[in-house]
Length: 80
Image (cartoon, rainbow, N blue to C red; front, side):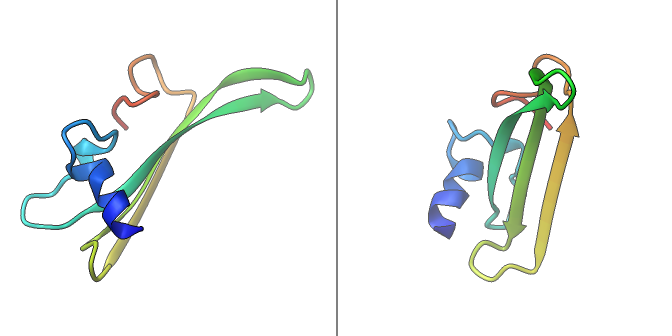
């Protein structure tokens, strides 16, 4: 599993390439979720997220970042 999560960061077509740290094996996963307005029951924006850990083969640090209602270009594979 860690090998697959490393490709999210290391692969040139990965969605988490901005999390790469030279000299470290970093693994992670990006995500995008629709937010629902609980009163109206309709979609109202997005939450963009990234969860990662390093070194991938012996994790010493874990990071999670979530942004509610990111601006355009900051979700669907964009930067967090």
